[in-house]
Image 1 (cartoon, each protein chain N blue to C red):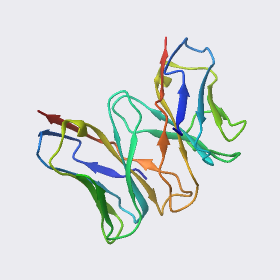
Image 2: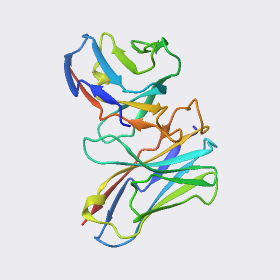
Image 3: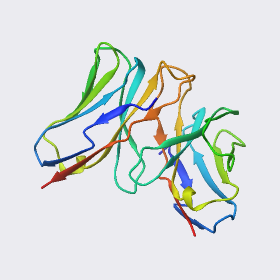
Image 4: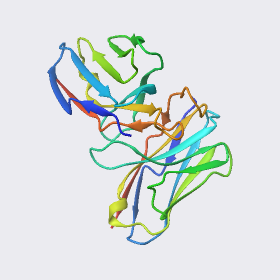
Length: 115
Length: 112
């Protein structure tokens, strides 16, 4: 089945220690998104790629970076995690950008704990 | 601009109906509905694009009003599997680009 896969499901890192989360997709979708979701809150968009074009949200901290080396893979790098960065990180894809929007297909998420 | 969802939480008995609302102060390009179970990723339910549109499958349906500022999700004869948090995601004409912004969610708990 075509899907969006995130690894790892659970990640524990130390305060200030860089961490990378990965996402891969077999849907061949052009657009890939990273959302941050804290407990009992809505998913918050951090950034997205349309093909190789990177779109950063204005309120995404500089501590968060992303790479998309090819259509299938996308990475989220947190350069110096703080305790406030503990959250579920969701990767999603969609077939196209632009309006009207196509549905988002989410991976199962990576739950990040910062100690 | 984040859409406003109501109610924040609903508790139902199995077989009862529920309505979840999602509203915006400005007209929308589209409304998405997703369901998320605890510890899992959100799952797409449906998307509405046209004013006055109604669509659905099984016993879950949704409407989009003529002004395209309000959508409702209808859960009929609810089943235990319907439990979870429901998010609407909207693309507003106010957005600089076509990103989807999620409401704060409505927690639905179905009792046997």
